[in-house]
Image 1 (spheres, one colour):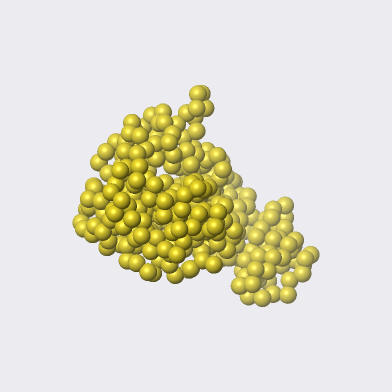
Image 2 (cartoon, one colour; image 1 turned 90 degrees about the horizontal axis):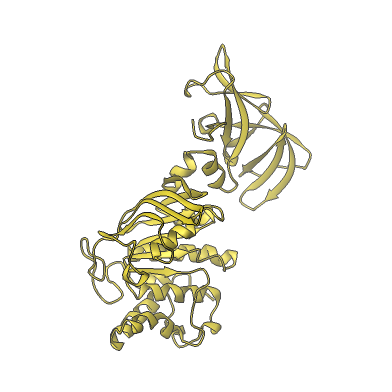
Length: 385
């Protein structure tokens, strides 16, 4: 059984794992501020380029999430920050040092992996203190750091156990503890919750976020799960095919996606994206979508006949007597909400309702997009208009 309140036991924001207090621009180990600056970073495997001129600035103490579909380059970028992958061109700076040619051990980073990577023949305490022991830190200091990390992570009762005697969540805590005791300038997380069940993932992401708030350490976190990104990040870097699609605060990306890729990737269920055509009328410009004309008064002047993508979030569709006629195909009650998949003309639409409705598959309803919450994208480029 996991203890959901373990992070409340120890105020680690003021005191580092070795007892140092954080003051001013110093980290707990007395180092420089831990900004991370990535400039025109590229990575190629032979003729295949997988990261294309990425530029990212991560402020000291920020929690930044790299998110995107499989193969987008997010894990490769994280591994280049860690020093586990070589850099084809560009620079990575941690604090005031360019670390391109530094081995991982000299970058003052600590990494938490998806698969825990614990030594099965060592106890929890020995796993957490192994890196310090290898660095020839004195035994008393190792014990002090391990004990303090165990306290903050709720692992004190398990220090004498072996990994096989722990649950998945407890093993991930041990992996986090192993990173904490090193007191790094930057934490790197590579999809650390992917091996946990759904309920445990929800609990662990809350615990990791609270841990960051207490430690105040710069954190770079990789995930393919946009819900993890939205709930944990100070800033999100959305990646696609080795490029950055957008960078911003979670709600900025949700409310003003820069392109159709971000619009469709951020949000669950994702934004409805429907083909539309601009038409000028006596009452002003409109967009024809699924046989219905929607006013776009106040929008940029678009030429008559301009092809656009009309975007609307599922929760921003209201039931009405008029609007887009759509036939109900699937009803998914979740308890607090009902998700409904509908067919409008030749396009699928998802709507989310908080109120209970007596829907039946095959019923036809009318959906009215909330005018202030409509998004328009250029059909040719996918960019926001």
